[in-house]
Length: 478
Ligand SMILES: *Cc1c(COP(=O)(O)O)cnc(C)c1O
Image: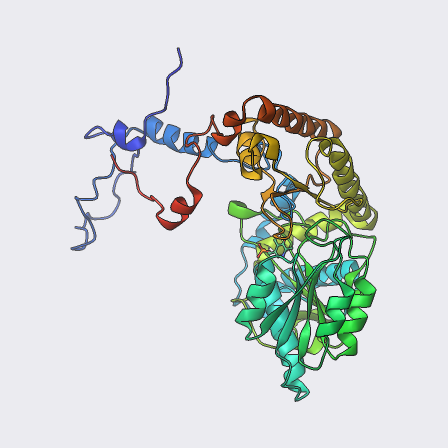
């Protein structure tokens, strides 16, 4: 017999049960201040065991990289090594206070300095600031730096940010937040920036161009040098969306390709936890022209002493204190554990895994653009003959214990499924996923309703996603 479903904690409540034992009072008892306790909230009364089961059951509903395959394109859901967590709990580093005098936290500053240096080396930029708290925050930082650069030269007529139509939504959002208008540049048939269309937009009103390379189709931008040249020639600057650096580590450096500023996502490429697992971190790197505008403080070193300092024409502070320090510890640990050769191996394996999986999956789902891919690839996830859409395939994957790929992005591909296996998955896992995709394609022919009504094994079934977002039900109703 199976006991199910497990009762909700509110239904287990029985008056007088307690999930805590308090130590005996060793101070005089005092009444609680008026107005701080309320009877009417009606909290459940349960035993300690019931309480533990409630939260354990909730935790088992979590889906995570620690439990399952997670091929969520553009998000780089790779394994977060446990050694990072060990480093992040070293007491000398966790027990310091951000307002401590700098002489007393030299070790912490040295670690930030070393991480800045490592990211410079990896990316080919002249300087790095660790302040921003996420990728989108790093983009905002970089665009503000571009704005400050033009303003510092009295060049105030620049109002136009060029953004390819394959870009992540944060690119246009960031530009708009910085007060610029967005001009969309189409992609050509090979998924590159359409150079003709770009050249038509290049004039003295251009702030710059935000380019993702590899782009969100998982393809290396074959025109990257020409794009940089065209934008620079009209006085614009090149922003690199470096959220997905996994295919470039140790192989190519954005700073060398001609970018002026770029953000990194420590919570993607550099294995710090992602999503609910922890805060993000989105450092920015800058080339010579934008170096003086980096947000401060950054860590500098003089005669073996480490010091916090704002760059000359800094756009200022973007984050309280020094950034999400715990993520610096984890990313630095990862970089040092891998070493230069290891990082290059990461890129090679990420690209190999993606191309292997692409070969296994494309007999059933066709490629958006037929080229060899970098760290990820995009297929059409629909099966028109069966009346099945990419969303149905994704929901059915949940029944097989796989997190769906990124759906309906990039926007230029109809029914896009963006698949990123990462380098940390085994050959067997990739083959298993491809086999599941084959089975789902077969099911679609046999019983399309099975897909259209999926998922079938989850605590809640198919949601009306629009209603769920507009009218979320956030509280338990007995
Ligand atoms: C993830 C991602 C971002 C945004 O990063 P966040 O840390 O989620 O703000 C920007 N661009 C691309 C291409 C991304 O994949």
